[in-house]
Amino acid sequence: MSDYTKSKELFERAQKTIPGGVNSPVRAFKSVGGTPLFMERAKGAYMYDADGARYIDYINSWGPMMLGHAYEPVVKAIQEKAADSTSFGAPTKLEIEMAELIVSMSPNVDMVRMVSSGTEACMSALRLARGYTGRNKFIKFEGCYHGHADAFLVKAGSGVATFNIQTVPGVTAGVSMDTLTAPYNDLEAVKQLVAENKGEIAAIIIEPVAGNMGCIIPEPGFMEGLRAICDQEGIVFIFDEVMTGFRLAAGGAQERLGINADLVTYGKVIGGGMPVGAFGGKKEIMQHIAPLGNVYQAGTLSGNPIAMIAGYTMLKTLKDNPSIYKELDDKTAYLHTELDKVLKTKNVPYVINRFGSMISVHFSDKPVNNFAAAASADNVLFNRFFHALLADGVYLPPSAYETWFISTALSNEDIKETIAAVEKFQP
Ligand code: HOZ
Image (cartoon, rainbow, N blue to C red; front, side, top):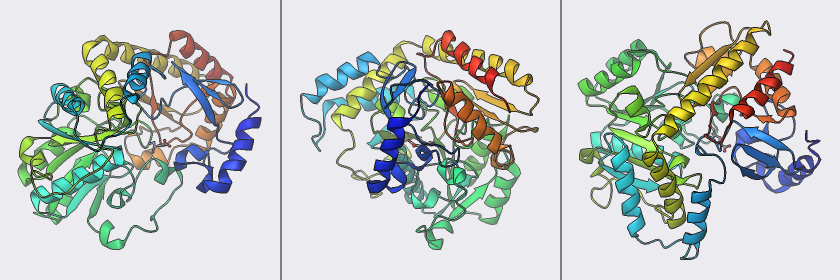
């Protein structure tokens, strides 16, 4: 167990030059309390902090480390590629190979544009949907997080929910006015918004399995209903697959749920953990992007060679080894079963939501199927749960408003060790 000495020193030092001591708010441990751990290295299922303590990692860089940390073929590919320069700002053959690979794996993706993050992917997809339809408004769901572009910071999940930020200063009323929100899994609310804003809605964007309010699963008929509304009203249906893409299946949530999206956004997973994102979709829509069309979007680091080789290596491994998905599902199912057995003995209400290799626990006595239900769970108890596990070397996301991600590197022994830590937890 770590005494956190070095992390405490580093956190103090960091706060002098980095706002809040971190470069992304959820990492600050502000809602769970305590000192954020400063990590030094990671390998397979484990991360090691600055004090040398080992943690079983259930964050996996918020999703992309599906094959565990420092997956050797990815590391080797990066090392080799770096010798040929780290950035060109000019086209490369590798970008074509990457685009062809993504198109071959993703349903409904005829064309793809690389960017550098999930935030960029979502904001660009929204701009494209608006440019394509000539409409301004869009619908998002309470508790879904689509990165930190202004238009999405309305009733957002992840850090915005964790820190209970109701209105984000700096996001103008003019921008937020075009963001309409509905509760997740509430088709009637969407129908009403569409009726009230007839002919004005450019897009519906959704995390097809939500991961930014814990793991929230779409109820039967919900996605089908959204698809039907989009078809009837000429609305662009955007799947934000930053978390689910290439994780729930080679074809992401589209494949797993059997739902066709018009545009899809991807994030870090397609860079094997490097800073990458992409948006893609049907040619009819994608051809409106500059320089083919006039919807402008650009970036020097887009298609960066190091990010491309890391992502290509990762995605090719996933494509060539479909058994990875069964392995991920089986491991997560085992974790689910064992968690359930031990939490049952604790005399506290709890809900475990799992879809594929995404899983989370809410301490709630009712089903957690939307943000209101996630917010009404006992999240103070979650914070204690988090710290109890951390003290035993298990690193969960430091917020009840995040999903946990499983990697193939996680062994049954690691799961048993995790369950032993849960056994010791005193609610
Ligand atoms: N917003 C991210 C999770 N949903 C956290 C990003 C990070 O801190 O790295």
